[in-house]
Length: 520
Image (cartoon, rainbow, N blue to C red; front, side):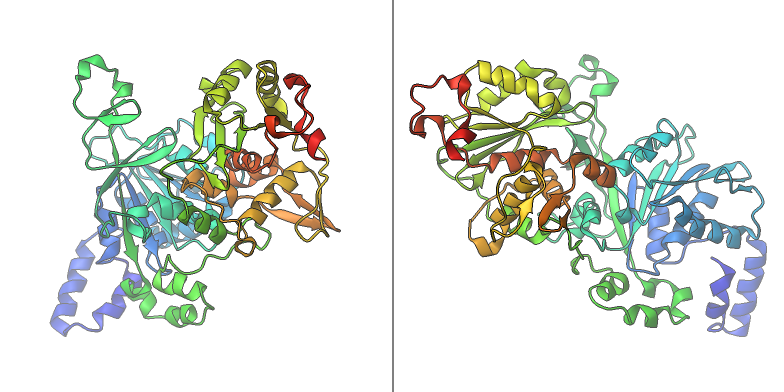
């Protein structure tokens, strides 16, 4: 334990006890010890991924510095902005007494046989610098400020070849203050989400793996293989390659508060936190993850509207006719082809296919045809890779509607006063209007985490009397992923009349039909 706060504790000892403690401290050369309580629990945790914190003042930075100095040989300390790692550097300086071994130009600290590196994830793509870079400790400080995709990418190279060292990930954080940090609550859902069906106790280990980019909670750490995308524990290892045998990773969350830190309790830090306005006071002082998360006032769709629509969703005993499909075609890499299906104002779960399964137009067209029912119009984004599937669907005499979201929008918002920069802006705004509780649409969206995140990712601005929703490229730059789910559901919301119901089209060839010609 650090002498900076041990003097405060020594005051409560008898002279004999004080003398004994000081003699013991003089013999103990350990550079750092964890505080009793939550910090010790986190320090000694055997979890592969440990979440720690909740409230301000719980010793998050101290834990990172202590682990790096005492338990690990090769460490990576990450903040959203690289300059923010200076807090850890300062704490290391206090513990070591100097900055010998620290190279500020390379952001590396060499101490003995240990190496500590410091990094920032300021921009999308920064995570690629750490591809293949092994560390036995990856510490993400204030992880709620970071993009989920970047964090998952970097922690993928957490490993060690030293059998004496437990390779681990540490995520420290306070409750998120913006909607973009909500992913951390989902990541540690058994501990932080009040709606989780099987809550976990602080420090309890739970096991997870990722299948098709979705986290799956498992009952134990027993290895398994996937059969029809479901875990199978009864298998012959000889029939599977090592890559096919999945070993779950453990997670835990350990809450810590200011009251767990005697050093801060001896200062006026408590009074500073008590003076904060709500909900920040409850978040920082009490570690309250249920306290209000402030959303950007320019977020297109409020998170609460999405939550309400998903809470209304139940699977009907008998589905009404399908009225529309929306198709967002994978653009390569980790993108997925997403198909959204709408029955009235009830939306089904998304159909999602890795880009590797939809390499060309015929493949996408086949999936769309398979998903279609009741002669529902098929709305597909024809910008870029969507053009080829559209052509094949058109040739197959399907009721396909090509949508170019970059083209001029013709409509206005519900008030009739505001116009839209382009069709992309209008489609996003139509979903906002459908979800607005004042409009009584009774829209029901499936409780899908990817869809929820995407719908809440969009931001907008007003240019005169014109609504401009940010582009896909702008969203990718800001959050590190493409909002493919939202795009598909925006398209599915389009109300195109079914071909056989449109008056005067019975003599037209299907492939010449443009539904927009009939409704404008």
